[in-house]
Amino acid sequence: MITALLIASLAIPPGLPSGAVLQGEERRGAVLVRLDGAPALSWQACAAACSYQQACQAWTHYAYPARCTLHNAPLNPRPYPGAVTGLSPSLAERIERASERAPSDRERQALGGVERTHAHDGQTLPPEAQNQLFPER
Image (cartoon, rainbow, N blue to C red; front, side):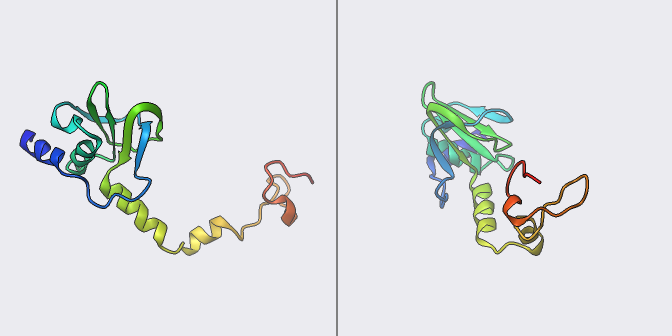
């Protein structure tokens, strides 16, 4: 296991899409494992270590103290100076593939074409009021 992590720390993760790595951000919660040593030397090594852990969905690299945290859930990032966070290559690839496909009929229906109604009387709202949070009658 240690040998695999050392090898993983030397590789740069291939083909991470833009937006998969965020500078000056961290992720908290759902820690899979904290790594010191070679995976903590750079964010690239930390990302590579994540790519070799099947359960890893996201990672955070802290510059000081040098530490790599692998996460089993990709929670929202938050600002943290000196940290770099990103998604696992497999999760980033799934997101990219999903964003490139055409929406399904169900998704198209959810995105538009559905008229909002008043819950209490079932009346359809006029088109100009359908995007308002609190529409006037």
